[in-house]
Image: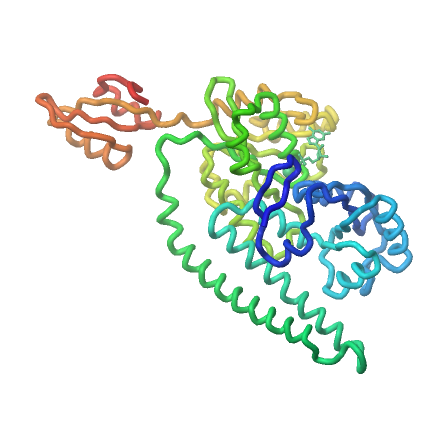
Length: 438
Ligand code: GDP
Ligand code: MG
């Protein structure tokens, strides 16, 4: 099935019954609900909702500590929520915590609109970002694992009602039993496929394309300003001609660097605080496309009280998915909200970072210049003449570079090859002409 994202482009969403169940049309007006001292605590959830295509029309915060077992927020607050939802014309309510199956069903009944919890929202975002086969399988596995107890919860709620109407084993429950069986079998198959895939993954990753457009991946926490950054960097030079390109994948856009090079910029799945444990694997495999980029543009919210920890947490996970070897440019975003003293402290802590405000456009030129500097140069096509006495060089080219053509001449081998900048040092003396057809 397809849905429209915030920019009105069609995109595929997961076929899973879970997201198909609640994902409505574009720009669904949504009310956010959480437990906490103030509304700012819902900023991350707001960014998550935005990523999933909802428009936040209201927020409600309940200052209680322990969630109410039936309604999560308590009866009185539920009345307030009902009023807010209907006054704002919301069709969706998003809770910042995971709801029990019973709470979910109860709240939907009381509110008369779709209710989604934080986990379902995150899963939907993963489905939107999963690119690789493994990523898609992992996300579906997590979605079905989430769905299964919720089906069961419905059945339990039925049997708890005691005797009488509604407790008979009717066609509804039989169908549910079938659904459950079906889901369990699918889960088992997904697990097997994932194991098979991870065995063959090492092979596919080694195969890299030669002269493709360099890829810059934006990574960072949700709410750090990744999408705002993407828009700020590409908005000004987004061409109509790029539209076809854009529809292929709405999270990828083309960007021209100050030096004239074209790169693709991709908005990757955001890190989230309080990531439910069951979603860790799905998150990793969805993020894995980052490890195939040529450079990571790491966007951090410099105004967050735990900005440093967030930067470290992102770097740690990038290390775990084999992306730490890639060049990284750190953008300390929301500079407009950081007081001078704190800014000076962060500058000492991260001397190579660029302070920017994606919202106000501050520091973006400097940031792009850093990206340009840090991005490895693409391989260049060269024509070499290697004397027969130096067949060691030819052998090394075959091993380390990409050899396109070899002709045996009178004075040596004529070799056309694609070499990287760092290989230039040991091939330079044999060059006939560089970049002739590259
Ligand atoms: P993402 O989740 O990382 O994609 O974050 P978004 O781009 O959706 O931004 C999250 C929130 O931060 C939005 O309300 C943005 O308007 C806000 N934001 C982004 N960049 C800046 C900035 O430079 N300064 C300020 N003050 N707010 C920003
Ligand atoms: Mg975003």
